[in-house]
Image (cartoon, rainbow, N blue to C red; front, side, top):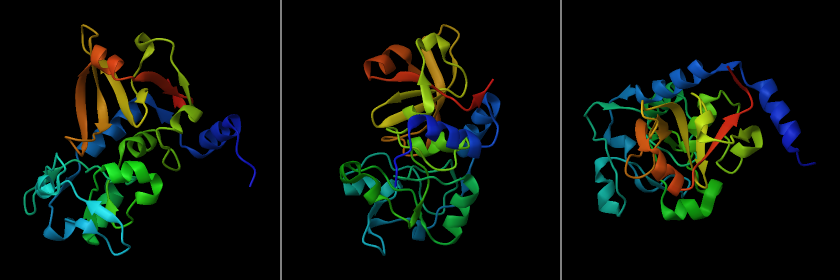
Amino acid sequence: MKPVGFAALAFVVSSCAPSLTREGTIETARSYTQVEWIPENRHILHGKDANGMEVHTPDRTLLYYEERGGWWTPKEPAKSMPYKWGGFDTPKSFLTGLKEGKKAGDVATMWKKRTGDAAVSTEAVGIDCSGFISRCWNLPRPYSTRQLPQICDQLESWDELRAGDILLKPGHVLLFEKWSPDRRTVIGYEAGPVPFWRVHAFRNDRDRLLREGYTPWRYRGLKD
């Protein structure tokens, strides 16, 4: 099959994705933080699923498996969608998956990071950082952090950032919403890795993000 060039790829995305506004992007992001659910014991897995894929859900027993950041407990109300390596769920599909007995999330272990797409479990539900951005932008499929630059333009300055833009570094991506009044703090949303393992609103120091290697980008299909 002939490879799809960057220009053709951008055309396909813009043709398939519904009309997108900055306000809609932020509304979608916020909806992921508002998902309410009651965890059950059957939603926990620390080991291999039926297909032999290793899964570690971010429940509070996660620490016993040498991973940090577990946050939910069976029978206690939980809010927000859990992180899942390779996840691309909507709030609706996440809740449907839980009813079917699927596992609630799957953290990004070192083994999964080395293995990549081949380490995605079909028996867990949730969303990862780039899947979250892809959903916020109404994309027809998940775009990895490596692929996002193919459908975006890098901004010349952080001062150009507007709601719905992203801050990207190798392996992770953040959704920008706004600046603090002094413009020193970035306010936004992310499907957070350790120690959060869920979608959450964040506030992060601009200088710290610069030191960590983040750069500002804008999706070409985003309407003002």
